[in-house]
Image (cartoon, rainbow, N blue to C red):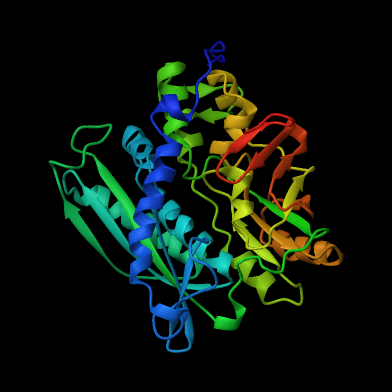
Length: 372
């Protein structure tokens, strides 16, 4: 099928996601959650490292237990539209274990939660197959879960097929080895590992562009995609656990690890060190991003705020260990390379030189010289 013509511009807000409202709501929610933490920051249940990082680490009698929770978001709708449910379980595992390893933890196990409009054995079996494959790729067990049938709550893109899939993962890390990026220094190298595509973030905007703005279906094959729209959007999230653990077990000093999800490269600003990141050698983005941008008329700043843009995971290492880190990470079959350098910047800005953008935590990206 030939590529459709360009369409009017769109963004995450017009697609129905109010990022500012989410941030404001999160602040109020967290204010209450903090009241449950043990006083003094010590003892059983104390939070170690820094809360709000990719995963939390709890002191469990002298052992660090890392825990996080996440789901597949509106990728569930793509599964319904295609009638293919066998891979989104991989995404559920990936979104959790990729976060866990960022604090230096070895993921151990996961429990899942599946809410369905109607319990259909074939669909549930397919979801289970994906979860099992994700667990195999991550080297974890799935120790349990919950299924809830809620016809009055769960509605989907296809009548009777609505579902939501989320998980909670647990890992182990020595309390003195918790990594929240405190060791990052100006001059460090940032090594990026390629993503498989959209992963599990930004699909609300992607669906708006492909199915509403461009009027396509999941079965339409685009010349510049090289596959159908459904295949491109359903491609499973890469799991980065094995290469990250190999790197952590090596002689390479790992100053930080970052899972690049929603907010794109601004995830790098989660680290504890108050430094900036100058990205000057990014990997070429997969075709799905260039097609999305063209069809939706999406600004570069919005693309980099919403999507991973071809880099799904980053590690920060001293420059003299860049080659060693790249060799270890690349041995797992994914494309990786140095994508940038840490710079001295107390504002924790992120420069994307190839796009002429600068970003600030909580403010998104803008053309360099403008205020995000």
